[in-house]
Image 1 (cartoon, rainbow, N blue to C red):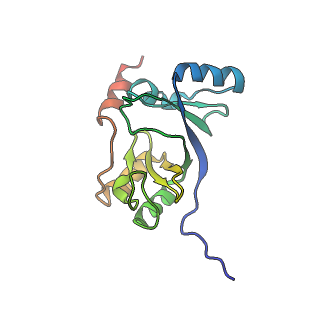
Image 2: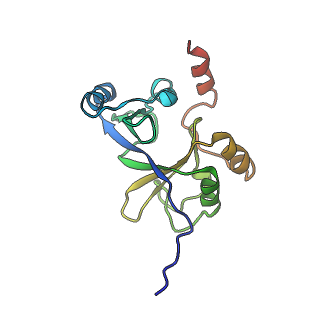
Image 3: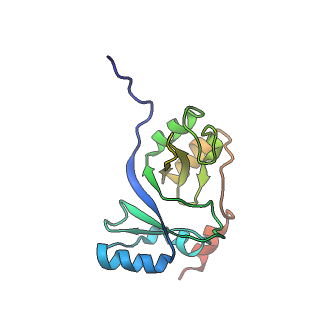
Length: 174
């Protein structure tokens, strides 16, 4: 029997969402016992975004843990444990343009292009498998995705914080 090749192939493991009651205590534990350190490139999310993740890595940022503090009043989408994969821009664009399909969004219903999230440093789209496991596909080719997909296809991306927050953060750094 001939097997059909999938239309889309997932990229490399980027990060895993980890829920912890105290993000700083967890970062210290992961550092002391497993060699993880904060990834400076993503400090914006940890320090400027209320409820944002602290990205830590033991391999220089190639694979990371995203530490989210658990709380009832979490200002972002309620996080659960999940796995994020990173893909290149061409793969991300092809995947998004293939939607909707037979993959569901985390909120239920078919995954659509307007489920893309603008994280200021990357673009992401969240999905679930048929058993409820959550995944994120992200692409760090920010400007290429903005120009060739978001603007070209007139997609209204989801934002969890104001668009000028990152600029304010960058301007406040020494």
